[in-house]
Image 1 (cartoon, helix red, strand yellow):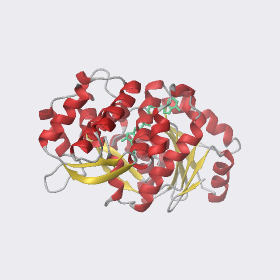
Image 2 (tube, rainbow, N blue to C red):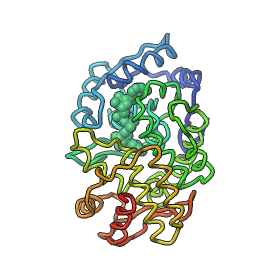
Image 3 (cartoon, rainbow, N blue to C red):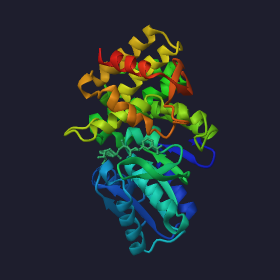
Length: 348
Ligand SMILES: NC(=O)c1ccc[n+]([C@@H]2O[C@H](COP(=O)([O-])OP(=O)(O)OC[C@H]3O[C@@H](n4cnc5c(N)ncnc54)[C@H](O)[C@@H]3O)[C@@H](O)[C@H]2O)c1
């Protein structure tokens, strides 16, 4: 078990989940799923809670459904089920279900208890830790939301066995990021992994969650240190947004993988890491994710998108960069030329 400031994260502990529910004695238990987690993950949850009555709300999967319109559906269903402030909401799914289900529960009747049961690698090592909840609005990611911790998080690495490979690899980008910003040893051992589908995840997920937890515990409201978690995300998010309209859009982690290579080069431009470090990071990441210069928009297209980043201040684009491998810094201002060189470094 990993203890955070206000809640615990349990890893592969079925008994702890049952105990939590017994202790909290909720009036109703609502499980929010999408069609994939309903098919692949709900049976396992039901088997863990076999003698407990669950009310399932199923929504369509995908980021396009992480909206206030879907929240309305969730609130309607909660009312129909007869949920009240003493009910419990279990968010069984990836980051979309966790962010939106948590937001819907935390705002229903001014706050119902909710727990996160993340079922993707990304949601286990990233989205379910740190209390950020919300939905997209008018084309802006996570524009409407709150920061509120769940009652607890229960992770089961068993769920990862049904995850499509691209989704697994997308989540893996966040593990690489955690190593690069906070744990050199873990970064090097993750870089050696050959086949993600043959990995035994428990220890790796545990160590990565510890990194995110230690950062978010120190800065729950993202006033300073927590910004280091955005390494790779300033350029990565901009690349992700441009690709959203493609027939086969890049997944979040695939865009972040490209962003990390570029932002490693920005770290070199600031004389923090060496060019050899950059080449090694690029080689390690492209070995797993391939090399996709055709997916990278021009500097002119990326700049206005990065200008919208929530981390910016006073009109300057702020980056979180690597001070060394395993150590990061935040609020770094770079020049447009340096960004252009970082893009060229990836594309080369
Ligand atoms: N709150 C945070 O701190 C935070 C951090 C990072 C990302 N996020 C958010 O997380 C979201 C992305 O999360 P995600 O990558 O988990 O996406 P997701 O929730 O869309 O899940 C990805 C796909 O995998 C399917 N799926 C989930 N679990 C499965 C399983 N065990 N087996 C088979 N299929 C399964 C889902 O149905 C979906 O189709 C974004 O909305 C992002 O903004 C939030």
